[in-house]
Length: 133
Image (tube, rainbow, N blue to C red; front, top):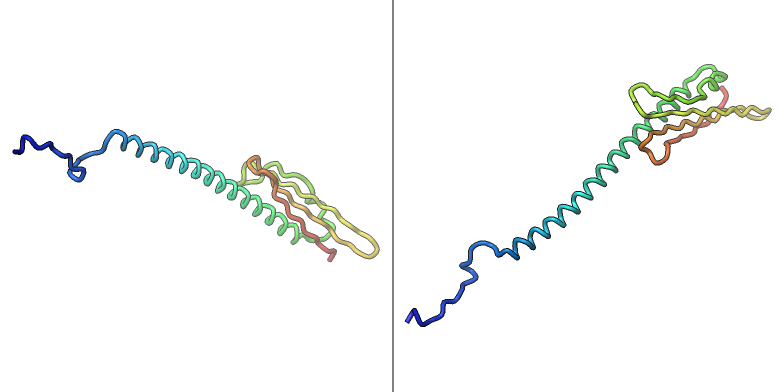
């Protein structure tokens, strides 16, 4: 009796995967890995740019705070110029622009500090006004 009945395959008893299932899993895994690789590359680039910009902003602020402590007021113009190398910060360039306005009604100096780096898309700049004292 058993020989005359056709054997049925039981899906639940099957072991392993078919070639088609393995290939589909590999296609899906490849797509996910390529997407993750692109995301990780973009994230690393953004993090590096952020760190570079943060250092540039710190260098701008340090220079402005140092200039604000200058005595006497007439010595402010001596800070104008370009620093091609900043100790401890290779690749950064800092430019300080000092413009004094002296009229009968007012006397103040506008100081602008700009820091650039080859990897920054645009330089970081900050301006402050220092009144005569």
